[in-house]
Length: 591
Image: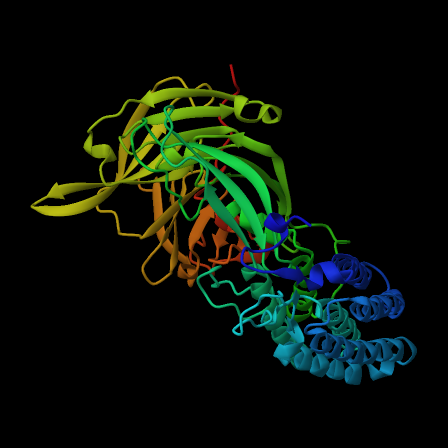
């Protein structure tokens, strides 16, 4: 055992719970069991899911027994008694769930009682703080001072597999109840309670907000430390860093990757660390953690029961009134690394989109731009703080950072007032909304300009500006949805729709503002793809996807119509400094 990689400095000799018992296999097996039960419950006959639950609890019971046997074999006895008492408590809970699973299979009429007893048992497990605190076993040094004490118990995931099986028992019995036509109020209340135990709060900020749910406590135990490898900026103007993954539950440390960043001309300046630089790596580690994957399955099951009253997939045997779309999103990390994702979804938003990362790193050095906007699927415009605008086209996804055409400079750095105190939003097809300030009668006012690039397909020079609105209202947040659509969120969190129609008849060229929603100030970031898709990002990194059905012409006096929201898989979205949704019409064919 390598002390530097598996134990924090200053500890003497540790036997961690994670290494002393078959903990990893135990948790991973539980995830596969829970996922299998959930998939049967939503895709097949419910009786089959109940049969599977009955079989799988027996498998987990053998694992619980193995934990107890392994603890008996340990040579180091410090704190062993407390841990074995916790194992016995877990076994008691597990035997209760196993008995109720057999009852549900043989006597489905007991579904109401089983759902209630399962929820009570889960509530007792969640509220038993001591059950989640385990003592890593520490050997006392021979020369230990009188002040030496064994390690304090720490939060561990040992009870989670039994808790997860109990949660799926509650979900299946609740599903059977609702299918039989029983009232849904108690099921919704139970689902809300379960979600409070296993979900990450949307306003939770990792390492800043105290953890409350099990998911938050697991996330808090995982972090990525950034080690400065070069004390001073190198002759080439770079700083080098090492990313180290730390898991305080398992007491492990391991290197992830090294990062080399350009920070400017070489000086005697010391290299410093941007605290956000490792957020992306940390979130990806969390999302792949078996304990958190297990809880996401429970979260999805509880959400379905609360919102739809069933675990089953939506019925799609009718003629669809939706259209399928592939949305493209680039993300820029604080280190300047550029990544690309595609979301396969429909306007119905009745299922989470399928998120596919395209390659690994598709670009570097993108942290220096103040704004980056994209149109269609592969044309990107980068705006610099000095007023410069560069054009890029992503032609070859397989070549990573080498797969780009460009940059091609469309506008040189300048002192033009057009680019002073402005914000940009994507109007689509190489057009951009620019908010500018000007002085009129000794008053500072805002206007809305339209910046048009005449050749978005090839990146040749050719820009013109048109003033759209002379007295533009103040929005703290604006973002474009392509096809001339502009959204604005005011100080109260109300969402407004606007649209500019190129070539429209006089008087109809600019439409809006039209209020289409409220409460949008709960998000840390909001942005839009084309075709009415709007995404909101919570502080926790959870992303919600909406579809505004009247995106082309607005409500036109009727009630705004929305589909969704649906949760986009993953929380690693919080690790991006800038999100670049590809929104807008396809540019002309490449020549």
